[in-house]
Image 1 (cartoon, rainbow, N blue to C red):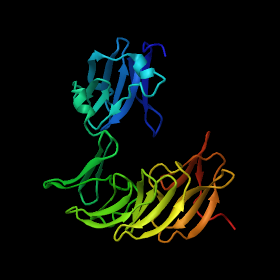
Image 2: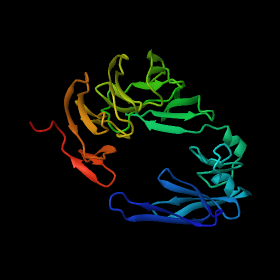
Image 3: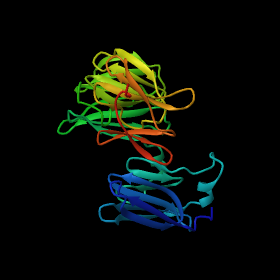
Image 4: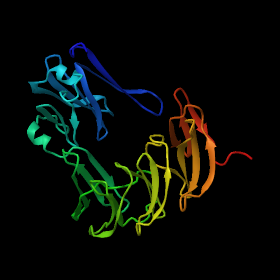
Length: 322
């Protein structure tokens, strides 16, 4: 609000003990602070209107590179209250763009901003249990994209055209020869043979998008679209069950031990309840309340933890006594 003359301070702390790992300071208006391959990139609009960026090595606390753009950016273009007129930073896998300025995140060198504008935007990458590497990038229009599967020593195995549904964390490596994807328009689920890209099956999908895979156990994938969790057999596309869930309460991997999955559900009065359902058929095993104000559930070292507005509470897992 002061025209970009204030000092920005970005502090990185170790989640294990709260110790400060890095304090990065810069004069100007903060554009963003993003993790990049274990480092931290901090970008500001400097008081002179130019973009300033630095990539910090978190292990040493020193910058790997620093960049100041040749062209200027007015701070009011970033601070404007009109979303249509505001300059929005665009973070790509290897670059940062802001208006007519772009910088290479690997080297800190200036890039052709117009060329970067046409490059894919959102990017994800997964290394599967088989050793295959799956990458996906959305095109700038956000309606289409491109993906590929590669393997070290063999190069590209095949391309695909819908975001992959690869579970992060809660997986036993079952059906490792199949890649599950959803079409870019969100209307179909497809299973692709990992060696060739040939389709194993393709079925209509009527859930919300975006959707993410939160677990895959014994060949059963759990798909979370924010409103429901759906279980689908990756081997043949059989829909096993679907259950409503409270949105945003479980932000990453599903809460499952491979036999049951814990699903958050809100009662009519807004209270959050944990419902344990069998993974195979969604039969309810038990349900239990959570502390008042619970907004987040996660697992830490095999213990269920609930976060409220002012406390973190460890919960016992299992049916209530009696």
